[in-house]
Length: 81
Image (cartoon, rainbow, N blue to C red; front, side):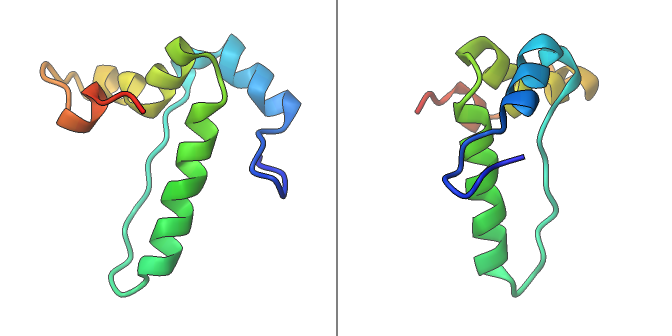
C-alpha cells in the first residue's frame, strides 16, 4: 500500500478517493512491542494524510464512528494536523 518513501500507491489512492465511505483504519496494540505499534501508527498517519481531507477524515475516524453509531466523536478526531 505504501512505497519505500511512505507514498500511497496510485491504485490504492484511487480506491480511497472513489470508495472513501467504505474504508477505515484501526489496529490492535501488542503489549511490550511499542516500536512496532509506533511504526504501524505512523504508517496509518501517512495513509490518511494523502487523500483529500474529506476522504481522510472519513477513513481516519468518520466511517468507524458511523459504523459504531457514535454520537460524540473522540477528542483526537477533532484535531487537525
